[in-house]
Structures are given as structure tokens and as C-alpha cells.
Image (cartoon, rainbow, N blue to C red; front, side):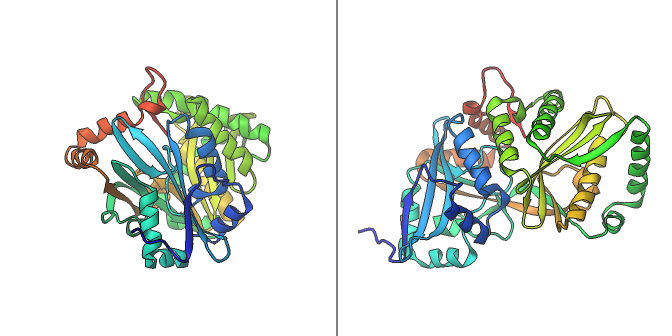
Length: 378
């Protein structure tokens, strides 16, 4: 006989309202990341899930005594070829994944054998449960789901601590020779015309910057043998929706202009005194020798410091430029659990053969790709 929790009520709510006041309150008192923000998850489930062939699997836990939300576990069911997977709501747009819950309540759930058993039953059936992009020092989701011990991913996240004034941060974070190089590049850029840098403050400016980002990123990623998510209508709609809904609170979109034309842009999320960079684009062809990207990140850091931000987060990925700006690596983790013989075979193959990992990644994207379009990347 399956034992039930005496403390929590646990159900699956596929149509859970992430824009509801109760979820906003839960998110605010949780240790979740910016990628579980109400706006982010609302747009992900409503704009991307169906196009990806994904079925919402939202585990909702409430305190039985009061009916108040205790935890939300935003998951998806996705068929990867013949393999049935359960994974966090990501769809290649999120960098950090975590349960939406406070540390105290999560500990209570772990101590409640009935609650853990219910959650594990609700997420089945699956061939493979995959939880990637887990930040360091976060809630041990593997214990809740009775999954294997987490393992480190082959990539890190990077963030730099911001200190005021800007000049002090710049002197401590950037190598002296790099500071001189950027100063020279900036002087060169100033000579080319009327240069301006600002944070978009209305919908027209946001949409203009996003259209320019789409234009710059297409050739850049195509030249690398890959595609860009912004070129896809559903993803462009997702980022536009997030940017417009979160403008002035959750989202900042910076634009650098030359003679009134956008030549560089950076899109990021604001969360607990941190600014998380999630997408950038630069007119590389028009300004080949000006290091537009580096100059843009320098201006973003200046603005963040003036706003009182404590951290500039370059998020996941081992691009060398992050260390040039004082970014310190933080490990990312993954958790897997096998739910069938097919899942065991798939996991074994992925762990043993790197080329199979690439093949599996391409297979996993088949649902997301239009015909004869290369695999996209953020």
C-alpha cells in the first residue's frame, strides 16, 4: 500500500498559473534562480512547450493545513526519439535549473517519506529522467527523486563580483594591459560617429534592439556551422514576450548605437542584486577591430554598478572572454535516473561514447527544428 503524506498535498497541474500571486510569493521566498521567475516559466510553457512536442509536468506541493504553496517542480515530458524523458523546463533557453522552494520546506519534504514517494510516483513513467544545469550549492533534487548522485557537467558558469565605483572594479577585475587595450578601442570607436549607450525603456526600443540582435546573430552562428534560436519565430516570440513583460523589473536590454543605429545589444535578467547575461549580439562585420563585445560588457558592468548590483553573471559556458572580465568558474551539475531497460541502454551509450552524446543531442532537437535547418544554439 502506498503511504501518503500527512503534511503535504501533491498533485500534477499541467495548466498551473505561473503568473498567479501565490506563485510570485513562493518564488520570492524560494532559493530558485532567475530561470524559474514567473514571467520566464509562463512564457516557456505557453510559447515553447507545444512547439517542442513537450507535455507540461508541473508538480505542485501545498501545505495541507493552509493550502499555501510549498513547492513547485517545473518539469516537462519529452520524447527524444524512442526514449521517454522527464526533465526540467528548459528547452535550451535556461541556464540554471532548480526546484521552486525554500531550503526549510525542502528539508521538510525530504524528511517526509510519504511526500517523496508521491512525487516519485507522479513523475513516472519515463525511460530516462535528466536534470542538467543544476547550480552549485543548491537544493539536492536527487535526494527528492531517489536519483543517482549528481555528477559535474563538462562546462561551468562564470560570474564576477561588482564593487563600486566602476573604476575600482575595472582595476581589480581586468588585467592592466587589457584595460589599456579597451580604452584604445573605445577612443577609436568614438571617432567613428555619435556613440551612445542606454538601457531600453519602452516596447519600441526593445523590439528594435531584438530585431537587430536577430540580424547580427544569424550570420554569426551560421558561419560556425550552427543556427541561432532567435531566427526561429517561436523563440523570437519567447524572448520578446519575456523582455516586454519584464521590462524595468525583471529584464534589461542594453543597446549601443552609432549615429542612432544599434550596433550592439545585451539582453539579461535581474535577480537578487545580480544581472545575468543571457544573449548578446554585435555588428562584427562593421566594426571588426573595435572589440564591440568587450566594450559593451564593460559598459554593462558600469551601469550595473551604478544601479547597485552586486554580481555580473555571464551564466553557463566556458568562453574565454568571461575570465577577462574577472569571471570566476562555478561548476554545473547533472542528475539522471533510469526508469526502464531502454533508458539504461541510452544512458550507458551517452556515458561511454562522446560521439553518441552529439548524436543524441541532434536527435533531441528533431522536434524543435524546421526541415533542413541546422541545429540552433542560444
